[in-house]
Amino acid sequence: MTQTIVPDISFRAVSKRYGEVRAVDRVDLDLPKGSFVSLLGPSGCGKTTCLRMMAGFEQPSEGEVFIRGDNVTGVPAYKRPVNMVFQHYALFPHLNVADNVSYGLRQRSPKPPREAVAKAVDEALAMVRLQGYGQRRTWELSGGQQQRVALARALINRPAVLLLDEPLAALDRKLRHDMQIELQNLQRNVGITFLLVTHDQEEALSMSDRVCIMKDGRLVQTGTPRELYDEPVNGYVADFVGKSNFFAGIAGNARSGLIDVALADGMKATGRASRSTVSPEAGEAVLVSVRPEQIRLAAAETDLPNQVAFRTQAKVLNRIFLGEQTEYLVAHEKLGEFMVRSPRQGNQALAFEIGDRVAVGWPPDAALILAKD
Image (cartoon, rainbow, N blue to C red; front, side):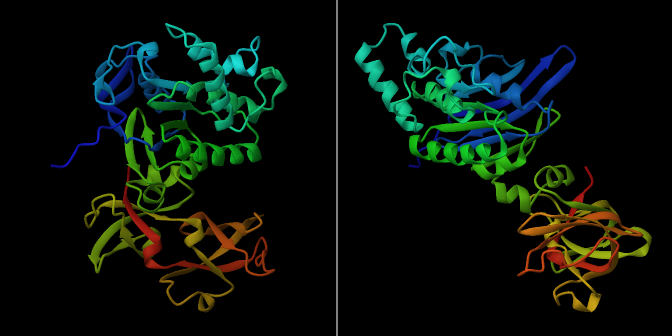
């Protein structure tokens, strides 16, 4: 008999209203045990409200919340086996690092023995690589060190789920990248389910096992980072996860897994439907989505690779050198402006100048045919 694995947190048709505003709208969601999940979306999409309902700071207007199979709808925050790391850490400035980390343990009744608390603090600080920092004051620490203290304070109670409310937002770019790696390693080492709320797509894609894209209080698509990038369900997801170019058109006939599309002013393209959605019908208004790195540039159309099917001419409007690649903004008289990213090849990092006429094209499987939102 197959044993059912109970998710660490489940939402069942959860909604949250504030007066006439529906901040979260009938969300169903499971956080598998030991996973690293991100809620990703723009401000106001409902992701933080979902986090607060998991933590118990808010209660759903409709639906139910389960933690490890137990219905906790209506249960206050202090009775839930979850801990939260806030965006600005919320450390106590009048306490040293050790007292900040041990705060949750010392609120238990009965209180653990002093020796047990000291041992747990040492283990928690070692977990976040802050051994020997127990007597420091929080204002003596760097931003990255303060974030680690907040993590140690949250993890010392061994919660079922650790909730992370944009914890890297206050860090500079390099430190944020370093802490992304730290969080991934930490999650793997402790085996606790992490839920990250962020509007930063790079952060969500680089850290998470699964990403949940939200819009207007609803879940639009859930999947692995690769699934969301390669197989978005619509233009919203394709545009929010990474960068993409969109060309409006009308779907035509499907053949051999590919769909013909009539573009502006009689131009034609071919692409494939996303595996995450139903193929559009002939005559349906669609978007052709092409990632910038999938588009090829050349001095002439005859110089484009053989697998390139769609070929045309465009003019370079702008160029940005990014080190390992160069980003071009090009313009076409019928398709409008779109972006191309060309990898660096040897020393030819800046092959084309602003104002140059160039050939552009892409293979059929690079173009995703998506229904309009």
